[in-house]
Amino acid sequence: RIRSKAVGICCQCTKCHTRKFIPCDSGFAGASLPTSCDQGGNIALDGENCGLNPYVIMPDHCVYIDQQSFKLQEAPEVVPTGEMPRNLLLSVDRNLVDRVSPGTRVSVIGIASLFNSGAKTKVGAAAVRTMYLKVVGIQIESEGAGRANTLFSPEEEQRFHNMARDPSIYSRLVDSIAPSISGDYTHDIKKALACQLLGGSRKVLPDGMRLRGDINVLLLGDPSTAKSQFLKFIEKVAPVGVYTSGKGSSAAGLTASVIRDSKREYYLEGGAMVLADGGICCIDEFDKMREQDRVAIHEAMEQQTISVAKAGITTVLNSRTSVLAAANPVFGRYDDLKSASENIDLMSTILSRFDLIFIVRDIRDEERDRQIARHVMAVNINASVASAASMDLTGPTGASQADDAEDGDIDLITMKKFVTFCRSRCSPRLSSDTAQLLSSEYVKIRQAMRGRREESGEDSQAVPITVRQLEALVRISESLAKMELKADVESKHVEEAIRLFKVSTGSAASYNTSSMMEFANEETQRQVERAESFLKNRLSLHAKVNTNRIVEEATHQRYPAPAVRKAMGIMVMKGELKEFNHGRLIERVR
Image 1 (cartoon, helix red, strand yellow):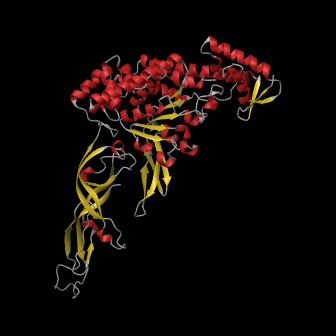
Image 2 (cartoon, helix red, strand yellow; image 1 turned 45 degrees about the vertical axis):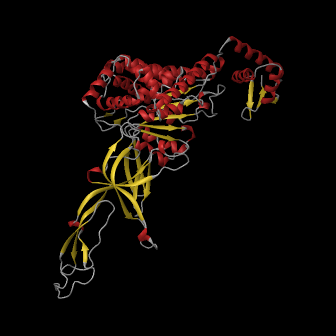
Image 3 (cartoon, helix red, strand yellow; image 1 turned 30 degrees about the horizontal axis):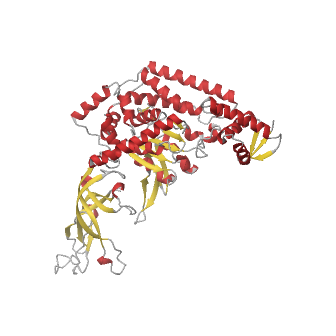
């Protein structure tokens, strides 16, 4: 918090009314009042001497400056193994106050000083001194994980305009996002993350209502599909990036908390969503959060504000941030034998606030596994060669920078500056033609979902399609136009936005157990058919048996265990089998 620090104290004698001005050093230094009046032997107005300690402070006549205290902490990558990061107290004043926010990386120039930190009542407190730094200069590191620099030179502006005119800027941005991550399923995810980095246009309606322009993305799927790696990369590239884990985050840590200082006064301290204002908040292990903590960010994700009413403090904090979340299904891995609503253990109120929802599957396919294995080996070999050839490329982003240099894509620093430039200089708008195209496509999607729900007979959808999804289509279209620094959204941007929506949220909303009826090849289909005939011959009507025992019997008779379990799932779908005790027992009903 900013407080007033006196650099000149005006005091007045209570007897003779003599005023005296006492200078006071900056920082945490104080000053002592004189014990006797300067008039000394002079007779006071009432004919008596002034006596001891006659001075009192005149607050209205003192000279004040703004002062703020910070804690400077070591960067996480330079902390020795097994040790806690050290911190140092900083004192800033005058025009340096309110220049940085928590989480910003800075370089500081200052004067080392000491102040008395011991309590006056403790024995030996006078000998206790604490070191602090009187800051004379602060430089914000715009190329690290701190706040991005919003000032650009004319050469940089011309360079970014030339990049935006490039017809392939969309594909170049996509190729530059996490180049060490490869796979067919990652192409659309990278395109969605590129749209999230740029964001849509924030709008203010005539009645004062605000419409958010930030895009929220949810990655839901199997382990080892690089979800956390995407989050870590986006934290580096975003103008303001904050990374947190859902298991270790509380509602107060994500939104705002009320803290009582040493003077027993209450003040607000912003959480991750407030610190990420103007950037992206990455939340890993989103499904591990407690339900009451997850509900706390509902307002921040849609209205982009955080209302606080605690300890007599009632205020509204800005939280204009995008949310990139990663979560696992209920059973750890996505279970083909369960419906989408059973796999996704998130309420529809939070799912509807995500513009794009990707269900990431780890499909077991030999050719796909070979391709991923070759890519992983190449990444490790290139990283080893790059670190051995040049120590400049080592560090947290060394492998990515080496890959970028080889592939000729946009490097990390340039991408961060380009994203910041586009977000600050361009705000595209829809035309009447593109608006008509979007609205008609939204109606078609709703009709298709209604028809699919009637066919399946389900009462509710795992991923709801609401008016928020129409606004999501608008934001994605605006972000695609913002990449090219276009003032108006074109039809090609709308078509790409609709395609992205269909392969992500549309696919997740229509995902059901019919996918388990599809087989990778004819051999797998024959194995499942043979296992199904074995189960029909082995199981008698209305007899409950142990599932694992049946699978063991089938494997002894040369039936593959995956084929047997898939055959059980198909028979459960057909209503021929019924599961009990969480699938541990099965009964043949017809």
